[in-house]
Image 1 (cartoon, one colour):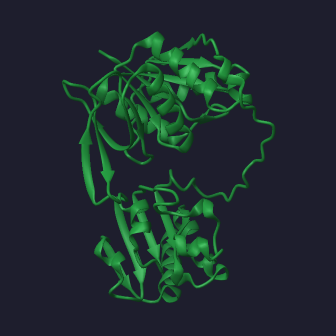
Image 2 (image 1 turned 45 degrees about the horizontal axis):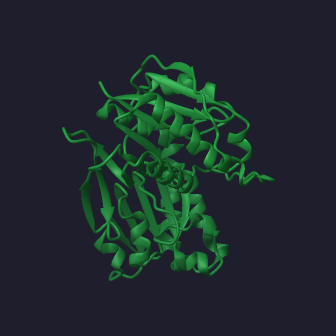
Length: 320
């Protein structure tokens, strides 16, 4: 059976959920071979093996920590030359897409970004993508060279499938460009205790209808009751009510959670482009004609200042 390279997104050995989703998708195409790089790379093996990796190629050279993406591209290219895979899968983060694009150029393969599903065919992997603000779904495949595909978080349910997970040291010769841009300082991001926005199974977002930064605590309380991430529309972010890092939309982040709750968001195309692939969408808006209601699975016509606290209380009551 053909092997499929999976680039591992991890933090000091803790494997992030999008990588486990990639392993699930990779098993549809062949036998997953994981590539773990940087500090704690070897510590990823147990989690990767539990989710289907037959081999885990590791390298923790200093270049991978002190410089930007080029060393990671060098290492992934070395893994590609070692394995000769049928496809390379990479998480669809900003860094992941840069790594994928650079690798595809080097190996003269085609690239598909932001896939939301993968399936096998006799002619190679077929990727499903959302196009034109998620108004259409397209299916495509790479016709020349090895396909390099980035996959959006929450595109597949994580499924355990224990495999050998044999750890092998990956030999890498870093290029001259690898040390061209050095990281001189790092500032840890302050943790809110909530899930990462793009990876969360539930997202609660607030928009113009929240009517001020001082009222976003209503959105946060509902999110915390559900164990959800907090999002915001462009209008709320531009008004300075919530950080840009939490913006959902065409000029913000794209999310695809199991449940998306939009509170006080009208549903402009800019916002819809970032959340339309959510599995279940709920909207709370006092304007019964708001465009968001054309998109939702469930809609509540009402004042969010009444509905959101009542919903939060009901969630907490049922949990308690």
